[in-house]
Image 1 (cartoon, rainbow, N blue to C red):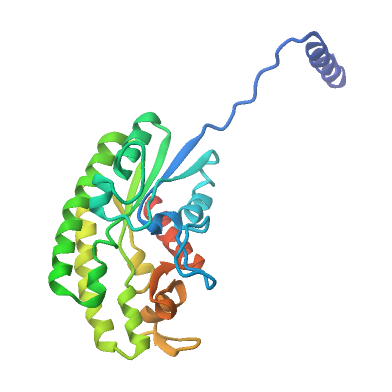
Image 2: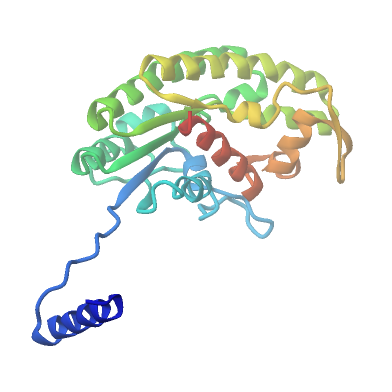
Length: 280
């Protein structure tokens, strides 16, 4: 049989199969997998827009940017955001800030992990910023208590997530960028510089908790150049600024609105830090 006759015979067989109702092999569907974003307002992409007095969740958070990068190797990946604006490490465990049928965000996350065994591929966690908000005022006593609380609670949260999700997901938490640097553009360089070691202590606790529980660390603080006071860049309307200060002003609304929520560009940087952590 010639090649052309063989193709004709195959085409005829397929046509007859369709006409007679004979089932053809089904195409394999892309399995659904999940990226689970947990934590505070940063986890739901909250932004403060010029026409608003308070921030609101958006679809331009770190989760969306991370999802776009991860889908190259996980085409069936979907984003699930369980975060809560204003959440602290305590309310994430015990509830009380946002309403969840399970009673708290942590319990809701544990239920999701248990209900989707093997399907959750990535878990991101951004929690603790609201615990340490008093550190922005250089309240050392409050800051010390907050750091200790974050260290204990973050470790408890991460341990429970690992227990529920097992080894299937890649887990990552994050270091925090430094809103305190905004004091620089308001003429208070002393406060801005004093905020750096406070944030370093806080981020050390985050890294310690992550290491203890098998979480990777998204180095958001590094992405924001939080220690770079040597490199100078121009940023309107402030003029020349150290890179660390300029990035806080450009990627958050802390400098102009006294609000630490990120802009879309800031969340893109945050998503990039998580992607680098996830890709190791």
